[in-house]
Image 1 (tube, helix red, strand yellow):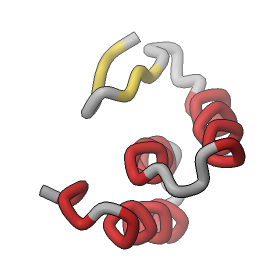
Image 2 (tube, helix red, strand yellow; image 1 turned 30 degrees about the vertical axis):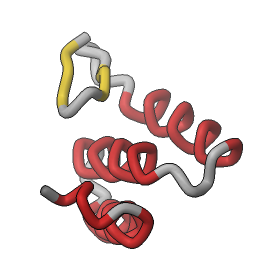
Image 3 (cartoon, helix red, strand yellow; image 1 turned 180 degrees about the vertical axis):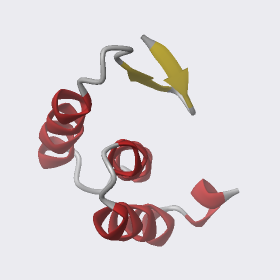
Image 4 (tube, one colour; image 1 turned 120 degrees about the vertical axis):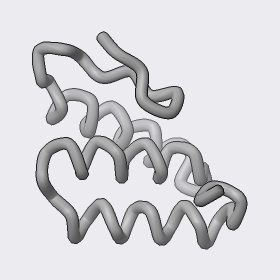
Length: 68
């Protein structure tokens, strides 16, 4: 595993699993800017730029300092 901005990603490319974990966590904590940011990073890794932008936008709506 390697670390990107406090997010652990598997080296074997299990990004779908990582995305599922972020989405499960967001169901419990939908106002977590950090989780939205992490979801955006995973989505970028799997090539889903549109949804990554939406997740990143939500993160900055919840916590403007996230994009710094």
